[in-house]
Image (tube, rainbow, N blue to C red; front, top):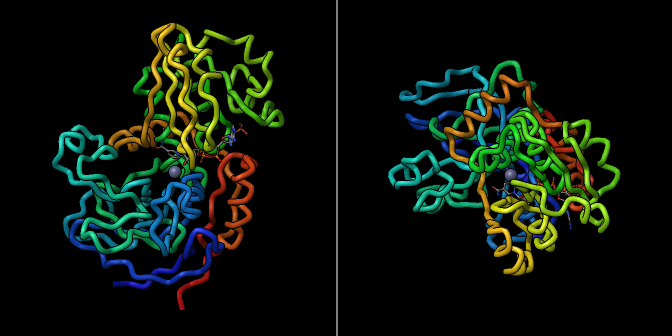
Length: 352
Ligand code: NAP
Ligand code: ZN
């Protein structure tokens, strides 16, 4: 065991505070990473505050992790000490079920092991995330970051990136597609960048009129303020695919009616309370689909990182010290994020 230090939530209501805990020594298949930066995902806030009613405490959040390799086990082939390495939303899975064999570990039949707020596969040890100085992860769940990407701005690719890349690929968004991205936050702004890079015509739907200029700067072709009934009315029936990244319950009918025949509305946001069920009429007329998507498999995450390296895509970030995490959470709760907070782990006090 080695001592790690991080910031943890001890329950659903206390602010995150310094926390010291044990990490395992790397086994033969493990990579130990000194964490340089960790992105702040809205899922961190949901789970720190027990929004999903499944939180395990003490909880060190964080699943957008980048850093340098400090130790490798004897069987490790892809990484050596000093390499840049990254970890996303999961750190293990059964490896043998049909979903794992199809490179879709996120849907592991036994349940994948999330990076934090879970038990490791021994069923006992609490998995702890990236708001910490180091992490030990099985090599097969460690990713490579293309060298030319800014490391801090690459951290959010590990969740916000793959969570938007994967559904855009799965629903074959490309040249000629008319795509809507709902919610311009961490996920949404990456969704815009990917949909534009894939050649789609992209419309951002936002509740924040002050994000209009940013949406266009990020590459969107059009912006609709979703609270404005006239603006929504003007784009009825136009979209092949809409990706909904909103973190709060809202009316899905408003977006289903924007789809063309055979169009799909895919949810990636996970609100604390479910969205009200949409009207059957809005699905039946036009043979529309309502779908969901969960992060992406490890191979696809590497594919996404390589795509970002090739096309120079990273996240727009605001760097914070770990001591400012509660302010960041509060701002995130108010949709005031441009467009991902990233924690500089140099700010973390060293373990005593
Ligand atoms: P975020 O940065 O806070 O962005 C969410 C955006 O949703 C906000 O910026 C805001 O955009 C919009 N929004 C927030 N509250 C709203 C409300 N009451 N009504 C309408 N719009 C609202 O969050 P994120 O990190 O992108 O995460 C978004 C959601 O995805 C979270 O629920 C998170 O847990 C979930 N998530 C899912 C997966 C997955 O695998 N499926 C992975 C990661 C995260 P505007 O200001 O533009 O309206
Ligand atoms: Zn996330």
